[in-house]
Length: 368
Image 1 (spheres, rainbow, N blue to C red):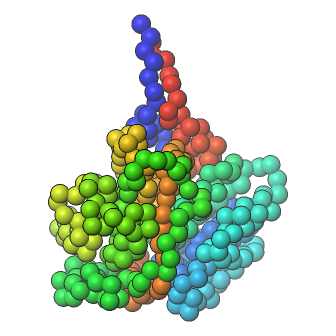
Image 2 (image 1 turned 60 degrees about the vertical axis):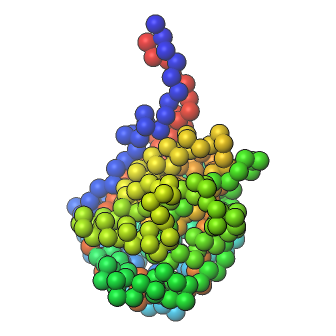
Image 3 (image 1 turned 60 degrees about the horizontal axis):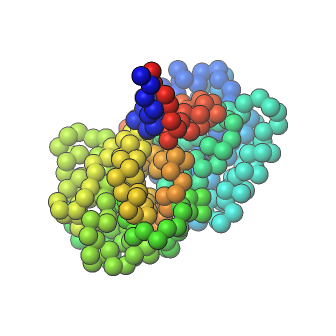
């Protein structure tokens, strides 16, 4: 007897690459790539991977590209000389691209088309170590359109602020809008141009990735439906980050993020790993299957780098979901992150194959 079954995300998830520890010297020795992408930021780990690549024998790149932000320009500028110096050792040429303007994805497409001189598959290393959520979402949207080979690398910070001790000493610094903490103020709420979703008459539901400063999440909720701040009525689902840390610290930081954002035990929430993009992808798909018929789903995408990657891939599968972001007025370089603990990689390989795997979700298959 034959059974007809709809293919679900869980059926194809193992076909997507896992995040793995990266030894740059072993992985990139005598390797050549077409392009290396990264962002220019104020964190130390902005330089971790570029400087390691610059010291590897035989590693070469035809083009290096770094993305520039409109916030903290003077702070970011401190790392530019060392970043350029690294490029000089492994790249034939380099350039920069402003990533906060409205035409960014269009400019990126033009640049990529210009770089792709032949029919051979274009090989890119993308360093997301200091990429913002907005930048990651935009990059993955464009890259998933192309027939390229994509290798994502990521430098994990040694220390993330606030530490448990810092929060216990001055909780108001992190829980109030007056305190600076890791960031200050809300520049603007940005409905994603790349992921607008499909507007429906259904009530809105918000999937919120909270941060250690609450005002940007509140601004997004207010933008979508101001009444949800007072009467959430189970229509805000919180994605609590499970940090890649020792168990005791992990549990303390989860309690901190709940307190900072006023998330009570009665509010619906998921614990989602901050390092494994697949966990975010599966959690979002579970919410989608449960809520999509009754609600229009909106994602407040202020999570970790890997959570943002998971959101990007989820949006490829479920483009009817809307994404919102909010930029701060300014980040606080002294209270953001320090050092580099570990380096990670996700080798997606040929994105033609990745799209083929993702496109199976929702298709019907016949089992005999």
